[in-house]
Image (cartoon, rainbow, N blue to C red):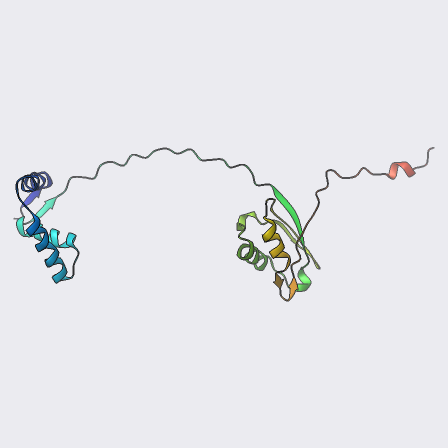
Length: 172
């Protein structure tokens, strides 16, 4: 039959040894043994413990883990800016290629490349508004399939102009 030693019994005996005995020589011996056996001092101590206590050593169950509820942080929405690129379908631009290029060259998060519309001669897209000027200047000179990206900020129209067609109607 396998003898079972309780963790509390071993802990009590170790406390007594640590309190009443001088252990420098034994520490050195453990270091030398671990080096000689090419193992860690922890593995050496575990092996020595198994020499002293035959059979299994039962350990107490781990303390319960208390989960602290964390409220999700709601970040303000990122303001986006509309841009125009001088490359499009004619220059063999593809969506994934463009996204990979922008992530690699500007460090923008892939999820913040929005509303991409690849047209024949150009591309429209939205990127975060706060793009640093040095990155913006860098993107102007990036080549895509031998063509300059030549990124430009587009001005935002405040509202659509009212139709002036009413001015030219005939009065009846």
